[in-house]
Image (cartoon, rainbow, N blue to C red; front, side, top):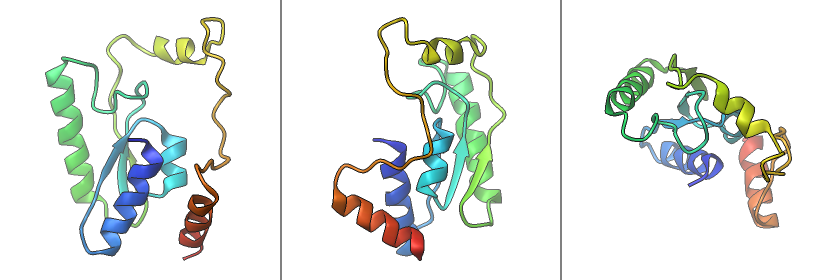
Length: 128
C-alpha cells in the first residue's frame, strides 16, 4: 500500500480515537500525507523495516519506531530513525540512474491523485 494511502487511513483512524503510527521510507510522500505520527528510515522504497531476512535490523527498526510512537506528542510528528542500509548509500545512486531502463520522473512535492474526487477530499482535509 502506498505511503499516501496509509497516511490518509491513519488520519481517519486517529479522528475516530484510534492511535496510529506509520513507518515509511518516502519522506516527501509522508510529509505530504501528514500522518498523525510517523517514523522515517532512509532505505530503498519497499524496505521500510530493513533488508529482507535481516531479522536483527528489522527488530531494531520496529523497536525504535515503537519508542518514537511512545515519545511523539505533537501532531504530524515524523521521527527520523537512525538506521543505515547495510550495503551503504549506493542504493541512492542506482535508484536515481535512468540508464538502466528506469525513466521515471524525479520526485517532487506536487501531489498526485487517482481521481478528481481524491483531490477534492485531500484538499478539504488539508484545509481543516
